[in-house]
Image (cartoon, rainbow, N blue to C red):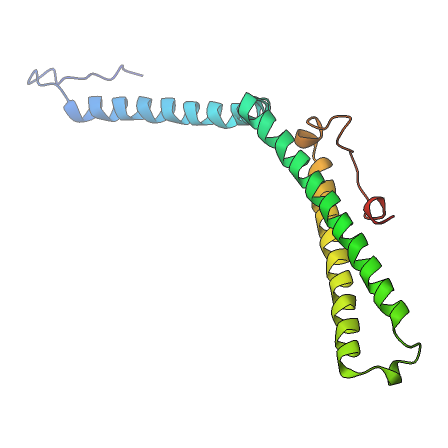
Length: 159
């Protein structure tokens, strides 16, 4: 096989088209290799970025504060629920055992307090579920301390 020449021996002109074709081919090859290397090393870079972001000072404080605030909100909802249950029980104790004897206002108050108790129970369940979902994530559980439980149940705040 004869080596290819980049110039014409007869005219002495440089074959620009052939040079451009070779340069373009080398650039495509280098780009393909670079893209392949980038795809191969992507998981390692991504993991490193996650670790950096997780342990960033501002992130550590923000995540802890989120758990702290959420836990206190759950405690407050538990207290509201206890108050609603107590109010409902006191109201029921003052009513006749036979609902047929209640007047309109008594029925309205009974229904309102019943709905309020149910709403606080549902809110508490939602808050506990959200807290537990975040607390179970591996990149979040490391921010828990002895003052913030790893897992909550709504019963912890009702009784």
